[in-house]
Image (cartoon, rainbow, N blue to C red; front, side, top):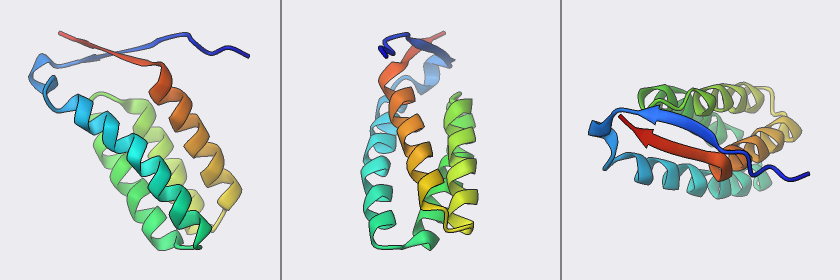
Length: 102
């Protein structure tokens, strides 16, 4: 199961300075949400999912918006398995995404 297939995202050249930090923050949020999940802090997980949902599309990352929506909903339901599944999907996505600025 090798997933080295690149996912190309086209982004506005004006966002070129911001996107690397945005993507780096998503990597940090994976670790943060895993920690919050371990401590049962679904409220903060829900807030982070909501924030992810709102920010993804603004940078051109619709998949991040979709994952954020699922994390937010799963946190409302206190569904740890679904949150973990979405974090895995986000991790795979971040590993494969390639940004093209135009």
